[in-house]
Image 1 (cartoon, rainbow, N blue to C red):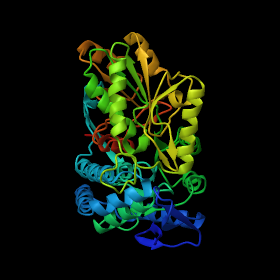
Image 2 (cartoon, one colour):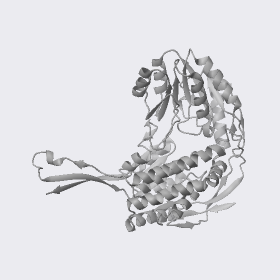
Image 3 (cartoon, rainbow, N blue to C red):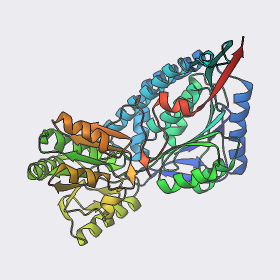
Image 4 (cartoon, rainbow, N blue to C red):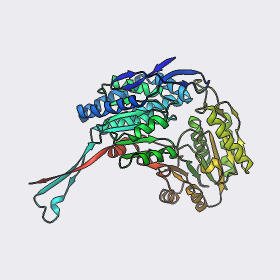
Length: 472
């Protein structure tokens, strides 16, 4: 069993306090991590702050480092994917895909590092400024804090660290305590790619301790957080005028209208709902299907679900692996039982074995049920019939969240109406809410968060715009 230290100023640091990392399928220990205390947290922030002040990395050098890191990720893809499969419970084929995406995210960040620019301001077009010139430039903020979740530990980490480094910032990184091994391997990759010591530091431990300490340190200028709305709100309230980007939860809706390709929609919704055991913030959770195609949609979704294999994530035939813990699987199972007690019906699934929750489809779900109005974060989705599109839009928008929404339709008019009326940061037409390309702006409305991810867009948030006025 490996011991994983903290990564501070280019060195691995051990501490007396330890925590175990478990194989999510078997519950067996696979690594022991060192937990950061106040001294180590201070050392990490100091290392980042001093590295930023001591050595500015030129844009093209940032590109070279990030480009090499992307290459190294693909060279080590199998090892990194196996790590994710063990510590997350994600199927090996999904984990391989995540590493490929993470490498692309770093590559996109590398390219963006070469085109950070301001703009020329036509100040001489205003009275009295005929002899003046003006332009803006973007400069790094300094130290960025990246706090990442368990469910997509490689790609979401790269969506924070990649743009931060591309913008010229130094980073203090806190991975989820349940999935820190991949974080340590990413730190090794950036070091091997030539990143100067101190520009990336990793501290580990409970969010209630380590996260709180990071939030209070005013040497950190920007916080990029992915996690729950409750923790995101606490972070936002703690940091004052300093900047935050919060990628929080959702209970994403997808609408299937009567003119849609029902077979295509049913397969897309079902596979997206059960990817990563439903533990994605843009997982398909609420599907609203027109009454004319409701029965057909249900039949196809049930049929496909019955073919999915729930098993050890390391097996190549496995389609759905365990949830992050038995505790979370029990919680999701209780939500299913509560919904059934209130009138919902289980079309398929609904049973649990340890951390393995069978892919589950519900119907007759009411908006006030937890599995509808809260983020279920499990392999569970509901199918609800509607009579007219106004009702579907109302149901889709009836949520405290607004990350992404999907709609299947062959009507251009309806597609354009959905784009305008669905209350979400992204509207995906003829695909599910789960779609995300790593270069696009990604972020939600309402309690789904503030700010955008996507390297180009978050680089703007991780830099400060400065106006330069030259009196000729």
